[in-house]
Amino acid sequence: MEEAERTIIISSRELVDHAVLTRKRNELQFKRDLLAKSGAKDGDLHLKAIDEEIASVESKLSPIGKKLAAADMLTLVPARKEIAELTQKINGFSRSELEQAVKSKSGEAYELMKKRAALTKSNYERREDIARLTILLNTLPRKDGEALRSLIEENSGPDVDVSFLPKEKQQELVNLASRLGRQCCVFAGSFSLDKKKVDGAELKPADEVRRTVGGRTVWVDAKRLAEFEENERLIAQLLAKIQAKAAEKQSRKLTEEEAVYFEKIQSDYLSALQKRSELVGGFELNETAKVYRKQQPE
Image 1 (tube, rainbow, N blue to C red):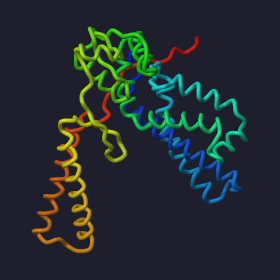
Image 2 (image 1 turned 90 degrees about the horizontal axis):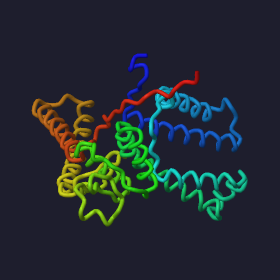
Image 3 (image 1 turned 90 degrees about the vertical axis):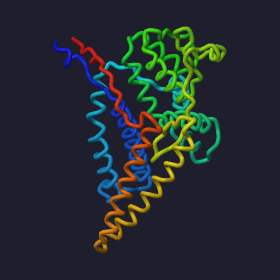
């Protein structure tokens, strides 16, 4: 069998899209269930609109889901064990007990659901860095990827040798793990969570500050934070000017001087966006990994 038939290319963009679309589908289905409980019937306009939206989301989610289902890849879920344990405890309550817990916002079941929701929300907010780290782990030998995954997911465990990786990949690893809340370093060629080794480590996470841009989490070099924030103010100002001038253009013909000004602010806006990409680093989701297909039963 040709290698192309035995392998699949998975990208960080696909992993992020899968997370976003899955969340959207679940939210729509939850909304539909609430309406149905409130007496809405199939065929009602509001239910029909939700059904159409669910179908649209499913059409986008399905090809990605099939691709991921066929790929024999390592998946990364920070606090996976804790989330599973919380889910098991929550499933021990009856449906009526859970509904009452949500209504009263109190009791053991509610506290368990709140704790699980906080963990899953944190993972969702950091979905891009989880996707990038997932791709990185899947470019490593399986045994090494599994060892690092276990260490990062549960935030504890023995050091893992990464000396075979180029220095830039080691740095990427500690940066991404740090973004997920892991205090880590590379000490004597091994990825470590031991705080005592940080001072003598050859590689430490970059000094980055977390910010949000257009609903996305981005990381900025602490030394360039002031530059980043000034550029964000410029982007907002230019966008407001562009929108105002575009509205004018729809109602009347711009003078030659105004047309030149309009072109100038659009050019400045594009330059500011380009600078944003430079300042946050890794703004694009273009990481990929080649993984084997799952073996089919004979």
